[in-house]
Image (cartoon, protein in one colour):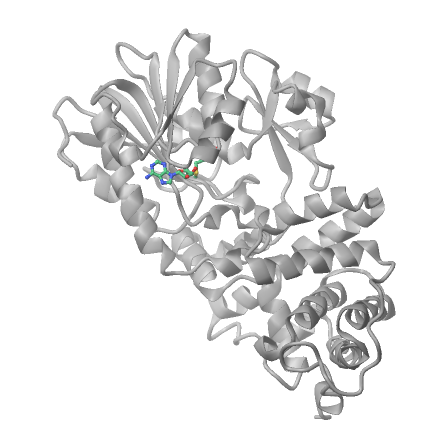
Length: 481
Ligand SMILES: C[S@@+](CC[C@H](N)C(=O)[O-])C[C@H]1O[C@@H](n2cnc3c(N)ncnc32)[C@H](O)[C@@H]1O
């Protein structure tokens, strides 16, 4: 094999600004889209920032044209999702491990590599635009290094790189698919475990999780119908939620839509709508006017549930420990009979047995919504799971204290990880006085819900986030914590 280009030109420098025979730095390029993408990737790497918060702000502040904003979004989110794949390829094309490459040079290389492997941008344009970016930020030595590395990347297609670098598809199918679809191995393993007998869907599940998702709107009950909302926004009525509307991926910022600005509608994944609706559907004999959302921030489900319970003259209490998230709930539910409490759901001070229905939409790894949070899959650690599962179990036990005998509890997480889903539900169902219901009938007309009693939704099956929902009824006997 020919020596790596990085060996021919080592001036990219392992860390800090490259030194040596390099030309003067130039002012930032005229490439507004790539500049914005690079600045976002740098903020993600250096400050643990969220790409989907940083980039929209940059696009607004710098007043990018619609075309440039589209390109910046595609490059930034695409590169963030693919970090693992990009770094594996870049590592093979460089003479040093990627974590020894100067940070901003690595950010630019990731952008360049993404363009080469996963977009139709011509090779010469992807390479030269990236090289100019690097020259502007890190000098001509680093630009030469970037040029050499990217030339080498461009020698193969994405498929060819995967075949070369991924574990063998027969002896290690999960490892192979993890690299192919740019997921950490532990996440791919968690998906495979959750799919169980349907493990042959893993490639599809990871591919759907790697694709840019459609935006879903929720029509606020009593304010606008989903048919009207679809007509006004140009979207389509969602297939399963009676309140849902699906917009095409990349259809612009949904916050700018008039019904959203006027709070007749909100942005909410259809899976979240279905999970919230499932709480409302099992019959509850007797009073049914006091509902509780025990983990309510930022308030998407509280707004839907508050609107629904208000149609019958009922009320919703919403608990959230983070004050700023409690404020977000308040601003969403202003016209609704919703009382927001700042506090810990495990010790809310609310009356025991005081509620007819309780939602526990618990804090979780968010592995079910990775497609919406571009860099999240590379941030989460397997060690996060056990602590979250403990908190989830504690919140669920608190919910059984707060619901009245005969009342309903929904346990919801946006994750397919078995430790957060089936395991938490199984332990809850062992508590005295708690009966787990088969949740599937409360997701009417939704296909492929598995063997029950919990329901796991999937992007590749349902076009929703991978939400899990388990339903329980509290029997007359009081549960013990
Ligand atoms: C998955 S989010 C809930 C999403 C929300 N239901 C919605 O639809 O917008 C979980 C929330 O639980 C909150 N949380 C974390 N620890 C909590 C606790 N001990 N008690 C109650 N809520 C908690 C988090 O701050 C976060 O806002």
